[in-house]
Length: 180
Image (cartoon, rainbow, N blue to C red):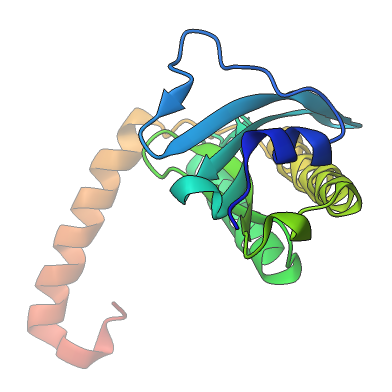
């Protein structure tokens, strides 16, 4: 027996809101906005999706965090996301490599509509709040503590080209005695 919107509304503590400006039914999925979950490091806005005729439920964040433009900070933030994916089992995290948008999601396959109860939904929401808050804390402190990007002096770029050219020519003449 598939999960219906009415059963989902009974199980979720809170009010499901129809997404503004979007169609209520999108193909074989029904989606709602859920009231934001407050953490110490920001709020987590959620979208609740009911897929595949009520046999798959997903909680997904909207605009959770955007990765830094600084490449070193961004790499560290990606490492943090991957480590959270390893350590957290209920909530999973992802990011879009093109624009750096980070999201969290919880996927719940629904075998029986009675298996989705209010205590289960409360535990899922608590897990999203705690795990999402932990991730936001680490991502934001990494971005705040990072040193600003260092501007490369104009002459340094040209000097490095000359050094490369000189090393190549020396390597041709002296072979293994010149370090790469």
